Length: 418
Image (cartoon, rainbow, N blue to C red; front, side, top):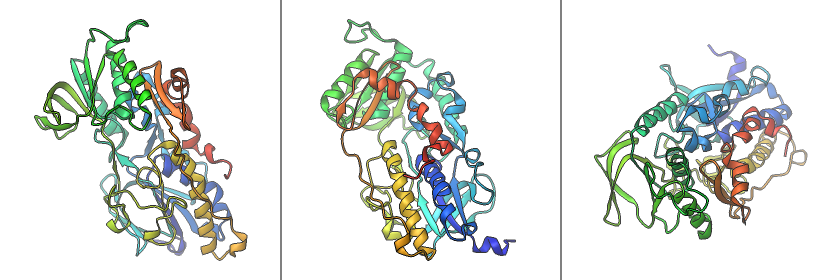
């Protein structure tokens, strides 16, 4: 039975346990709860289907072998990262939100294991549920570390005998995966060779765009295609996969024929879909979603979900405030944290003259994207400047950002209030 204290507690619920969810939870616990009036009545509650956070960007290399990354850095326990805070300030619930009543201000949560569905009232809500990929190889989707590892094992077993691999999608995930598989399976052509003449495994990227990596300038995409050729990867452009025979439902397709929109077909021992993502927003009411993307319709300046009512916010790939990218999430966290702080203090009765000014998020729209191709090459740009291959390797290609995540997961990244 709930105590009187529990009944009056004001829950700040964070839905999602990846970059946006973990970061804003740390920010709130460090910089918002300590200054709220009667702060013992507030609690940050995180809801996540997985009890681990992971460096999702590392999947194109990590899916090949567990030996390529230290596993204790690739996956970390979310509850352990929050043991540093006073008892009663934070609660982790392993489960999935199945409904949000933004008018009644409640969240319905289905537990991860067998158990009773919970309905929690919220005083403030952050939607940070991210997005799912078309393949189970590139993230938790609706599962956890166990599910992802099982998908990797299944894929690796098929990889042992595969002689042909097809990848649908010419974005970063598709290109990075092709590059990693190409170098792992075929090696790399010599310095004076423009392509690998006789690759052991045929690897093909199929993209509907005129160039791979369409977010970057065409010359960068051409460089990426040249690097891919040196590890035995072929690119088919201006075409897309329209059907798969036989049809696969598990999305790790073995022994399949791909029918392409240009009328040709492609045989593949392994097929990997790497075409975009789907925001994890099916549990939300349609009236707060962007009808064109199914993302949460979010004020791009303040990160408030204004259609949903007061003290409801969104961050990350589940919402439409910016192009999906980790650097956009990191830039948005201090803005969201400051605006939540302002809103919560005003709600607690603090005069407006005594609360921080509202912060405004401005998306970095200059060309910024880094794409490793194998273990030593890469292409990309940062803030509009094209980067040489060695610089892409230094920043990302060495370990796919693994060197950056410990401060994020532990909260050290947010030690200072921005």
